[in-house]
Amino acid sequence: MSRSAHPAGPRHADVMSEGHYTAPAEDLNVLDEKVWARTVTRDEHGALTVGGIEVARLAEEFGTPAYFLDESDFRARCRAWSDAFGPGADVFYAGKAFLSRAVVRWLREEGLNLDVCSGGELTCALDAGMPAERIAFHGNNKTVDEIERAVSAGVGRIVLDSFQEIVRVAHIAQRLGRRQPVQIRVTVGVEAHTHEFIATAHEDQKFGIALADGQAAEAVRRALTLDGLELIGIHSHIGSQIFDMAGFEVSARRVVQLLAEVRDEHGVELPEIDLGGGLGIAYTSEDDPREPHEIAKALGDIVTRECEAAGLSTPRISVEPGRAIVGPTAFTLYEVGTIKPLEGLRTYVSVDGGMSDNIRTALYDAEYSVALVSRTSDAEPMLVRVVGKHCESGDIVVKDAFLPSDLAPGDLIAVPATGAYCRSMASNYNHALRPPVVAVRDGQARVIVRRETEEDLLRLDVG
Ligand code: LLP
Image 1 (cartoon, rainbow, N blue to C red):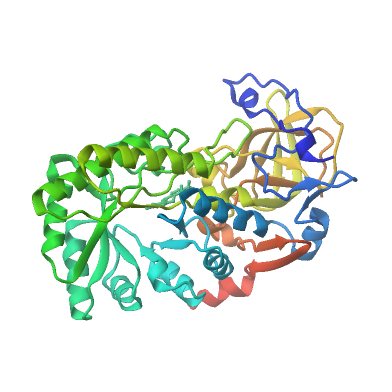
Image 2 (image 1 turned 90 degrees about the horizontal axis):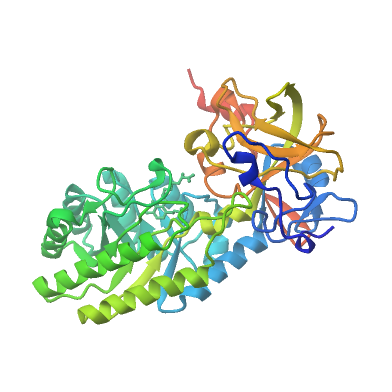
């Protein structure tokens, strides 16, 4: 039963519409390829396989809950992004989505660069051999220690986020006898259509320096006078999980306008612009993400057009996709525990993980899909809410979905598209042990981040 034979999957929109829970028309056994990693399919017995390995075998060997990451899909997505943008542009994978030493090695091998936003991410990147010049260092409140480490390592760029930081980085670079390449992060005043907590280009928030009131122009003025800094460009990140290219286009246009102002005032053409990350992925069948080549074309065209109009030579463009690379490549495998039907409402299906391995549903009202993966079933669909095992009623993994009504304790279910911001935002709430990340490729599975143990937890508890 190959997923490509039946492209449509469970219909989430029907589920979500204002309390009208229409049973899905589609076969629940069919996997929608939009939300699953590329090598995921069902074998002839109906069991889900990834990289050619059946989930029951994976569960037996690695336990549940666990994240299974399709390495060949990850690498293919890296290549799709770098091919789409071509040699005249740079793709920086945003490590906050998910970072491990194996991931750094894959990025290095696939020719991508890396955006880090903390000393911890920097250490992971350097430790796994990412050349420092291919690293961009971000953050709205970098510590002196982090800046010193980044400058000493020779990172390719530090993205400056405030007036204080312009001076701080300049002084540190000078003290270390360096001239540090930097970009200035600006807020372009775009309202990105996404959750408030992940929108970052409107003015009333903590990131960047506003283009409005000439503040960004003033930041450029100051950066250009400081010997420790080599100002190489302007950075704008408008938010996350965005499908509409319009926000990126406005952002690109406003950044190019600033480049033109800088040229007019200082006679300097800044050579680079970075348009950040934020491209949306499919969490459910209702989501319709753009492909990297469409994004590259849309951004390239707008920058070229605006630069021609302003009489500027086209700067080198960089982008920072995190979710769009790693998000679709992994799923979380859970074992079904308690099943509680609530008459006239829905059935609560408890799994052996929860908000400690996926906080996104609780934090952003994120929508996910779910499928029974250890077998197929022809039973009637039942409306379910997949919940975790934490002492918290908001501990929801999948808010509304359908699963077969013969679901039973011990069945394996999987939530796709959990590669980004799930393991990286995982917690030890209720002393939960954070799940492992297992990379699967060509019939081989190997742990790249191991499961935490109770000894790990007690080791930190030194009281
Ligand atoms: N560049 C910068 C400067 C960023 O701040 C971010 C994300 C990215 C790139 C990557 O964005 P992506 O392509 O992955 O959307 N934890 C949230 C998202 C917060 C992301 C913060 N910055 C979530 O789970 O949706």
